[in-house]
Length: 381
Image (tube, rainbow, N blue to C red; front, side, top):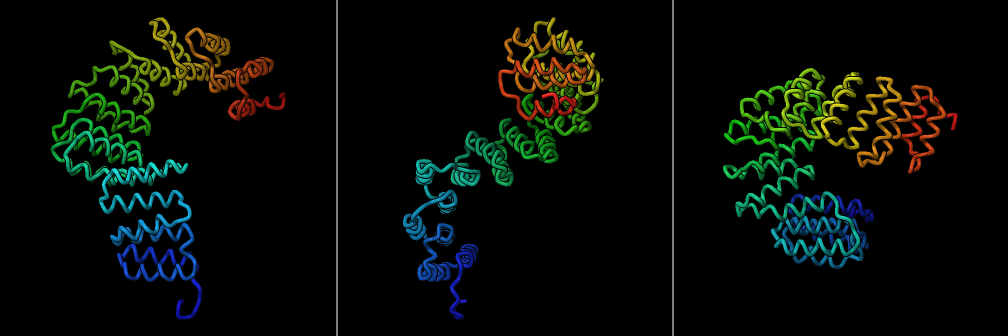
């Protein structure tokens, strides 16, 4: 291209510099830099960002600082690239934090790459064999979607792993949608002699519930019985929720009835289980039992109960429950109004629909109008 006297574009320069960075060809990268200056392409922010990366990958610290400081403006990529090369060159964390602070002062919002670079800078702290630091890093990497780094840190912890380490890894897999890996981690934990606590047990049960993994959930239940974990109210509630969402409302009911202590989540899970499987009247019975036991329902409870009334065709009962919400310190939200409108629509109570929409303390949104439409009454408004 040069021999043909063809002026390259910034994309050609960026591609060439990226290749030099990947192969750590400093001399070649410097030549491309000189050519970019001749053609005036070094003024392009994207080209300057790749120059910073190229010098950083090649270990030329003073050069990447010169390029960065000479830039007319910096974007998110500029700051992220700078922090990335500084982390790779094991620059003191205090210096990297200064760059991060300058980015914030410039009004730019850090993104996922920003935090991954900061975490990369923190990773050498694991040589201190500090479980608190390593556990925090595992959690942060997991929330950034970088499970490879989580696994690397976790492996290096070896015999230093504690309950928090295991919980962080299992939660990380679940957060990123890797249920199989989470279950494998659970079995590794068990066979490593680590005692599973109620927190770990509940985390994995909730994951099984979210994807209706009944067989896995039952395996965990059996292990929980052997480990004497099933008597904990949090674990029992998670089991009720898991069986309800996996279609075994009969198992959920047996567990629920055997519980000596119940919390808000226990009641909601059981009510939801019955409502979800078309047993609206049974769901309402459990709700009435909840009220008699002086357990306070929350906004989720009322959404579930109102949905149960819809499918059971209990219009007056549903309206009664809706009106009692303020008595429990709960102001109806958009989802509660949507349930009431659906309930009234199925009963063809047109005037009542208009009344409740006019009563709403907030403007009706798409959810409300969609509910009206599904009830075939939208033309009335």
